[in-house]
Amino acid sequence: MSKIQESVIIRTVVRIMVPFIELFALYVIMHGASGPGGGFQGGVIFGAAIILYAMIYGIANGKKKMSDSLDRILASTGLTIYAATGLACIAFGGMFLQYRAVPLLSDPAQVSKYLIDLVEIGIGITVLAVMISLFFDISPPEPEVEEAEE
Amino acid sequence: MMFDTTTITNVLTVMLLLIGAFFMLAGTIGFVRFPDFYSRMHATGKCDTLGEGLMLVALIIYGGVTFVSVKILFLIAFILLANPTSTHAIAKAAYDVGLEPWRKLDEEVVWLNTGNGDTDNTDNTSNTGEGRTMEDGGEVR
Image (cartoon, rainbow over all chains, first blue to last red; front, side, top):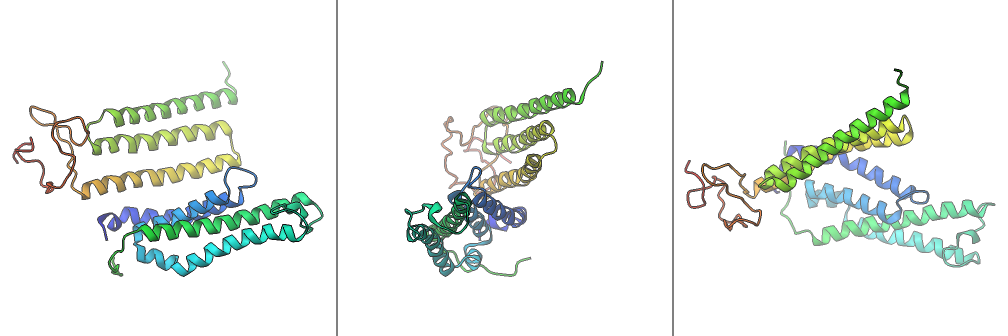
């Protein structure tokens, strides 16, 4: 446990900031169709929030929040959402990711809007899981973090 | 002479933008000109926070009460929260590894870790945290 991690100022500010960073990441993902942003950017921001938490509160505590098995599940889930959306378009007679082919709503533009959001969510989930697992993979092993301070 | 609200808004916006730009310029000049790590952090950390805050307040005044103004308000709050904290984190990391602050000595000015001196002080392996000694060019305590 380094001295930076013991700083009360940094720990407190990180604890305050992390939920807002995650909220902003969700905003970026959902706002991607009509403004700057998108699945990749939102996923990176969400992953950065978890990485920030793990950097300050220790890798072990970070893995409690986002375990390796959860990482694997999320990475494959996001990819599945993306691929299933694209393949569903093929199943309804269009091309890959040709949203207007899916006859969910009467207006093809509305279908495109919601399916693009779905695809962005899938991308975001995959990106955040891969970012976090990359960080955990390259982070040095640290000794057991002793609990119960202050 | 009558001032309508548009004139007052514009004058306030320009004044706040100029003051904010002045602080940003001062912080940047301090970053370039100050001798060592800590004083550079001192210059950029505070001046950038205040400069960005004032410029964003100017944008709020210019834009009026809109949804974007609320977003900018959140932006100011998070800049005020995150900027000093990151400055503190970087400075504390430097202090923990034993980087010494620059002191104005009696006769000569020693520049530390700026790459333009002959002090060959690019690593801190010999640093015990007790301050500079005579052979390092410092004064005896």
